[in-house]
Image (cartoon, rainbow, N blue to C red; front, top):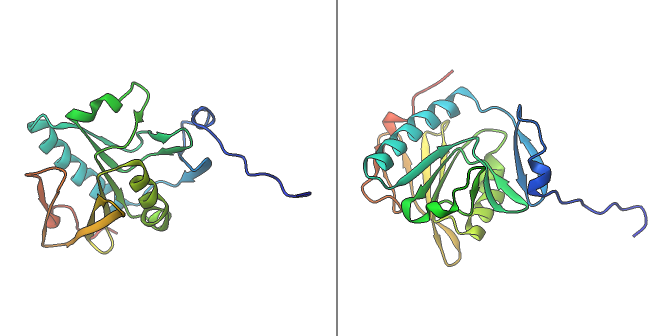
Length: 186
């Protein structure tokens, strides 16, 4: 059609040329910048990341990473989840530059700027690429929703709230009381 410009899809090589001073993701070939998370987001990320990392390290179960860590799901889908876990059995997807393939577990922590994308586009993308477990943490609501991959995509296992103890189907033995993670922030 005359007058309509075709959509240009960027690749991982294009993505690698972006500035180190910003947090970018490449989703279906479209580059998007994510603003810095708020204080509540950062607090939950630090607490949960520390708890996950300690559990994984103590049992020699694999590795935990936090953003910004590039996860190349495909050449046109590069994400930086807030937290992620790679099991010892799947460490072959680790490279010096990034993670090439689906992590076993991904955690996204809700921010106003990313909430819709995390719950729709990324949810579908993670399911399509085989992420086994996906957590959506909401610091405002003080909840974490645990989703497990099934034949038809992700199915909700449970939504945990303050005062409850979260467990993980992917990490048997892991648990965390949400009172440890959530506290009111300004």
